[in-house]
Structure formats: structure tokens, C-alpha cells
Image (cartoon, rainbow, N blue to C red; front, side, top):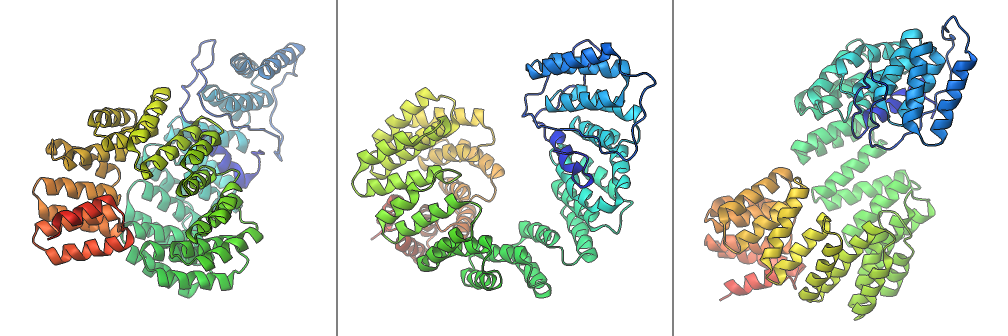
Length: 584
């Protein structure tokens, strides 16, 4: 990577800002700071200055060259601590900008960011006209949460390349994105943007920082200002739509619709509009938008794929298959995903052999595991459960995949109603991987089916301890307690925590409704269950919603909910049991 390209420098700086752990500043002792345990981005510093740096009055001596050689050899041998310490000492001794530059490169690449901060500081001190030194120093200061110290360097860097200041602002939030103090980031961004009121990217940058700091009104004000300065800017339009969508799909849809009247060829905005129509369950309007996109951009692989997936969702398998095949011809960026969905289309159309062929052609990517899981599912449906299990047992190429295939195998057993075998399989997997939250959670769900609530509770509490933000672990434990009508106060607390972590999850809303129903708070329960069912018309949510309506004396409404759900899921055990319980 050449860090001397003015328009790319913020992208480089983001490497420092994104280090997983800030490195402690180097002390004045003989040893440099301990290296941060993070990936090692490769930075190659090449001179590109129109004005040569001011060199120290003395030439590079043989002694200095010898030390440089030793440092480079240490680096080649993987003795990073020795190499960095040597470069730091040489930089202090010589104050030569060339050595400081090389020292900074080495310290940065080996993640000795404390040492890099010192050598970059010396580099800039002896060559104050070097924009590269200033940019790297600013990045390192941001990395160590010294925003006030970084500000003057960022200001000078922006001013030094006014022709590209817009591009620099577009990268500014990338540099600052992972800083934990969002309010401080917003203040810094506003300060940097003050000299550039006519630059739309400056307002966009403030809008992003304001949004991260949870200041929606300011975010909207700034993004609207950016769009006044540059009305046809799709990226800004998309950002405004996303901000509006957080509060209301209706507002976002209206905004996109108005924008598209002015800029009908704004493909990305039209795609977002169409996808939001799908989210809002306005499928007919969504299809019309996608068809319009296809006419306008017939060879655009992203549009083709979007139409295919929407058609698949609408069970329009003819159009889905046609567009997926077209996506293969137009070199879509993820061919394995296309093959996976072709397998799904053929599975839905009851063409198992074609589905197996497409699934087996998925060789990598995010769809590798799902493709093989569905391949095994087809075998199981054909009465070949033993073959399906063997296929999954042999499919894993690494430890994480083996865990996922074990989960898939357990799912096949559950679908075959062999809950004991699923529980035992997951128990064996947990004994080999006792700290896998995924396996612990799955075994907990299997434990409920074989009435091992002790295992369910201990597993879920361990998951919560390992991953305090695992919303579904709190939810599963709370729901289980409520479903068994025991420890309801604790159940409420658990589901409440799950809802805080995932406030828009319909299944967690369903659990809260069920807990409240068990606590005889039917009105509050109904509110949660209705909202959950609006988001996801799931059979089990329908079962709970119907039961609460029935308990409130609204029998006709309950029957209507159940009848609709039975059409979609006629074999759902909970739904069938609920309907049977209240049937005359």
C-alpha cells in the first residue's frame, strides 16, 4: 500500500484506529512497549515528497549502517522486539528523517504502536513539511484516544490537500469509527468541518458522527445540508433514508419515493426503496420496482440477484430461477450464493436431484455450510437419515465448520422426532468443546425436549456468563421458566434483559408476551404478542396470541389467528396442541 497517495491516506490511518487493543505508549526504558495482539497490516513507506526532507548535518556512518543492518536482520528472523528497539534507538541518536520513517514503518507493521508514536513524532519534528509523518502521527494519536492532540495534525492534513478534502472527509469517520467516546468524535468532526461549510462531504461526516452519538436531529440536519449542496448524491440520500427508517418505514419510503421522482436513475436508492417495500410487506410494489430496475439495468448483476431473491421470497420460482441463471451469466460477485439459491429453488419445486446437484456445487463462501446442511436435509427427507448424518460428519473442513455441521445433524434428528439422540449428540460435542456458546445453547434447547431442565438452565447460565450480550440465551431461559409457570419474576427479568439487547426481535417480544400472560397481565401481553405477530407471522407466536385472545373472551379473533397460521404451518406441534386445548 502506498501511503503517499493524498486521497487514500485516511484509509491507511484507519488501520491504526482499528487496532483491537491500543498499545501502551512506550516508556523511556530500554525495552519498547509490548506489542498489541492484533493482525499485522503491511505498510510500505515510499518517498514521494516534492520537497526533500532536511537531513541532519552528519552523513550516515558505518556504525549507524551496521546497526541498521542488524535491525533489518532481526526483523527478517522474526525478532520484532529487538528490531523495533534498535530502530527506536537509532531514531533517537540520529534524528534522521529517513531512519525515523523506516522505524515508524517497522513499528507500525509489527504493532508496536507506542514505539511508532515516538518515531513518528521525531520524524515530523525533523521534517515538519512531511504530510506522511503528520498523517501517521494523527492516526496513532487517535488510536491511543488522544483526540485533542490529533486535531491540529488532522486540520493541517486537510488543509494541505484542499483539492481532495471531500474524499478525506469521507474517510474521516472510518478513522474515528471505533473510538468509544462518540460525543468526543462528534465534537472533533464538527471542529474539523468548520472551515469547509460548502463541502458536502464535511456535512456528511458530521451526520455520521452525530448518528453514532445518538443525535438524530443533528444527523438529519447535516445530511440534508449535504444534499442541498449536492442533490444527486446517492450515498447521502441512502444515509438519510436509513436515519428515517430507524423511526418509521413510512417516512423512509416517502423520502425515497420523492427522491426517485427527481433522480429516477438512482439505482442504489431504488434498490433500497424496493428492499424496504419488501420489509414493509408491500410485495407487489416491490416487485414493480425491481422489474423497473431490470428494464433500466438489464445486465446489472446486483439488480438481477435482488429480483431473484424477492421472487424466491414470493414463491415465484419461475422468475427466481430465470434471474439466478442470468446472474451466473453476468458474473455475479458471489457465484456460490447463486448456486445455493438455485438449489433452494429446485428444492421448493420438488426437484430433489437438481437441488442436490446445485447444493453440491457450492464450494466455499458463506453458503458452504448451509448448502451442505440442506443437501443432508434432502437425503433425510428421502428416508436416508443415516446417509445424511454421515455426509455431515464428513463435510467439516475445520473446527468451526465441524461445530456447525454437528448442529445441523442434531437438527435432522429433531426433525425426525428423535430428541434423545439429538440431546446425546450435542452432549458429546459439548464434552469436546465445553466453551462453545453455540453448542451449549443448542444442547440446552435439546434438553428441554427430554425434560432435562437442569442441563438447560446450567448451559444457558454458562452461555450468559461467557457472552453477556447473547440475547437469545436470556430469552430461552426466561421463556422456559414462564412456559412451566415457575419463578415468573425471574423469568420476567431474564426476558426483559433479552429485550433490551434485541428490542426488535419478534421471538423475544413473544416471550415477553407469554411471561406477562402467565403473570395475569393480559392487556400488556396482548400488546407484545400483536407487535411480534406483525413483524413475524410465526406459528408459535400465533398460538400464544390466540391463547391470550381466548383468555380475554375474544374467541372469534383467536380462531381467526389460529386458522390463518394453520394454513401456513399445518404440522406445527405447539399450534396444533393449542388449538386442540381450546376446541369444543
